[in-house]
Image 1 (cartoon, rainbow, N blue to C red):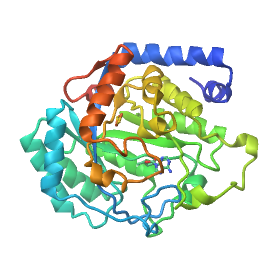
Image 2 (image 1 turned 90 degrees about the vertical axis):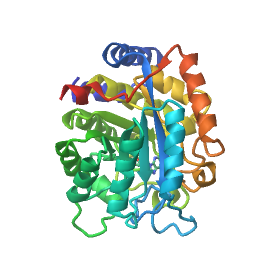
Image 3 (image 1 turned 180 degrees about the vertical axis):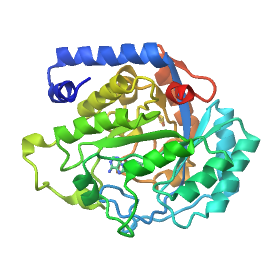
Image 4 (image 1 turned 135 degrees about the vertical axis):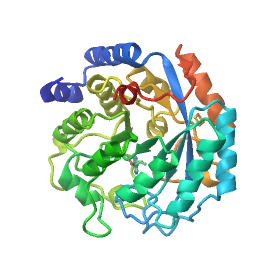
Length: 348
Ligand code: 5AD
Ligand code: FES
């Protein structure tokens, strides 16, 4: 698929012709990764963050948020709950938590690998090669790090550097791959200042990085962030601005499926936040093959407020499990068994 074709779909507003895009994405999904929907239990185990990303509610400067870091025993009981629910993977996610002890984390990974059959996915932000290698050796299978936007100026403008010399995320993703992780990345759709050309390049970047997992969600403004408070973005014409809509998110998910057919693609919580009744089902019918039911204890959920009104804030892990099962059955698909590794990773 050429950049022009990608742009054609991104700008297409005609429902009838968009049906063709949904149909193509669904057929490719069916033939390349099948009808199984894999469940990843998401455990948001720490909301501490040392960064100040202009879009994210966990940013260090948000002093309205009370911070938590779950102790090992509490994490393990959530992990065991995930095993009992038949999940094949636990995703350990946190802010970029500098208080997280690197060896403590390695021990936790070793313990999960020793005591359970789960695949372990880490989503801990930008980390040094040394840390990433240590956790990989401890047994972690996968790493998620969204590059958010492939436009370096836009990226820099919303993502202040801590030291002035971090590696860029694309470079870091290549390192993550080289270390041997099954590698996931993705973007937000409709970041203020993001153009259609940027978005088309993002989709091209999914293919260039040869990603095993691709997570795409709409940008949702958060009042305690700079981007959430800004009314307008200077710098681009209004007609160039990508809207942060549900429809645009489906287009990017469908195109991601077409450019990287073997990738695991989740129907994200941000999408379910825009459309709680049917967002996940529509995502699964337009390219996605993964969902991430939340395993985080209820008392912490409201504190992991990356963006406001996040889906599943008032639910328990058991609620999310039955909700996901029901949704998957309702569209004639089945829950995947086992770890659900990406066939693109297995092939490599
Ligand atoms: N709206 C939508 N998604 C967001 N994320 C962070 N802040 C927001 C927001 N305001 C996404 C980023 C990040 C992931 C963990 O959550 O893409 O990588
Ligand atoms: Fe959490 Fe539906 S997945 S309530």
